[in-house]
Image (cartoon, rainbow, N blue to C red; front, side, top):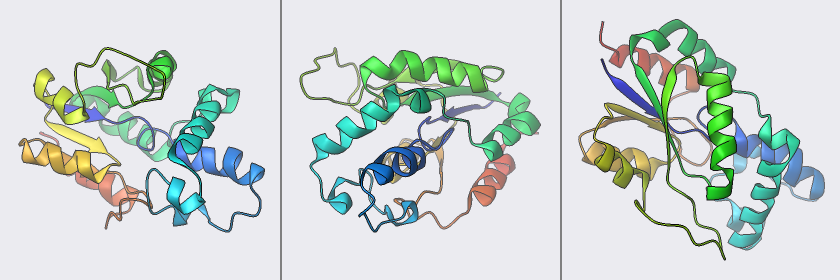
Length: 195
């Protein structure tokens, strides 16, 4: 049975869109950018702020009730309902160490009927020292050795997985210039499943 490894933020949920629309823009109404114009991730340069300011704002949002209760992406949930039983599912996310428990709980709340493994590579934060096993998601996948397909919004992760011989699909987001729509990406995913 194939194993699909899913990213969490901006793949299973809409974290960046929610943060931008519900936290950043209301606090910065003079900002002329729309979510669809966030062509870089992280978007700090586009927003005219330092990287640490962006991460601090994102982390405040993650810790908020809105951030902790993000809805899953309906199209992805529907894909799981229709096709989730056809393969195994794992999650691999890059999140700050302090938010990993909430991320795991969120995944199991919304996708626990299908997802049986949760892995994370802690994203770096200043003044937070944590044990480092893997520097990247691909390092983690290499160690784990079970992934048949990765779904991520980061083109670097997708390209690195492909170089390792793992099939990979890019979740369309403004910052990755994917040529596919979400529906097309999910259709392509379905086509890769073994009968």
